[in-house]
Each structure stands twice: as C-alpha cells, then as structure tokens.
Image 1 (tube, rainbow, N blue to C red):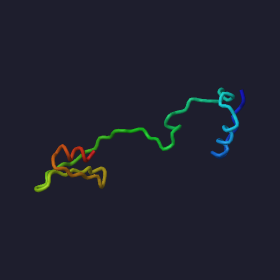
Image 2: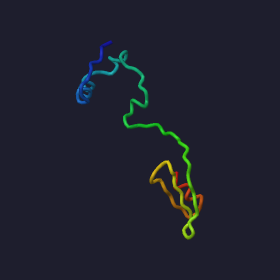
Image 3: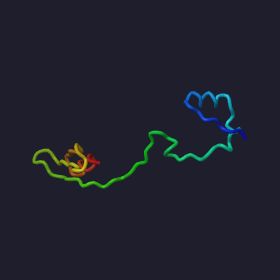
Image 4: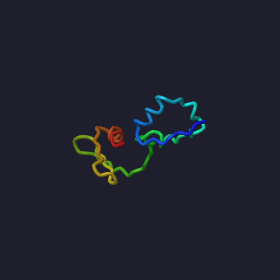
Length: 86
C-alpha cells in the first residue's frame, strides 16, 4: 500500500483525492473520533440550575436563573413559564 502525503491546505487534499483511489491507502486509514471528525459539533450536556419562580399580580408567572444572567421567562401558567425557562 502507498503512504499518504501530508497536506498543507484543503485544496491540496481535494486535488489529491481527485486523482487517487481511496482503496490504495486503506492501510493508512484510522477510525475517526466522531467529535474530532465533525468540526463545530458538540455533544449535548445537561446541567441542573436553581430556578426562582414567582407569581405576578396581573400577568401570570415569571422565572429566572440566578447563575445565568439574562435568563428569564414569563408564562400565563406555571407550566408555561417552566417550559419557557428551559
């Protein structure tokens, strides 16, 4: 099997594969880590935060997360404000 060259640019990589067959370089291939293989991809993580709820006298409920400045929500019902704060 042939050895893969080192590419300095994406254009070099594309030009190389336009002229060569992948099967000739199978011994050089390694299984990729999905997180590294997809730039910009992030796994979803869940966090627990304290949420403060209160009832407004005239217009339903409000909630905010002290640990996340600016994270506030409003809803006509407690269920609605809970959905909105997530």
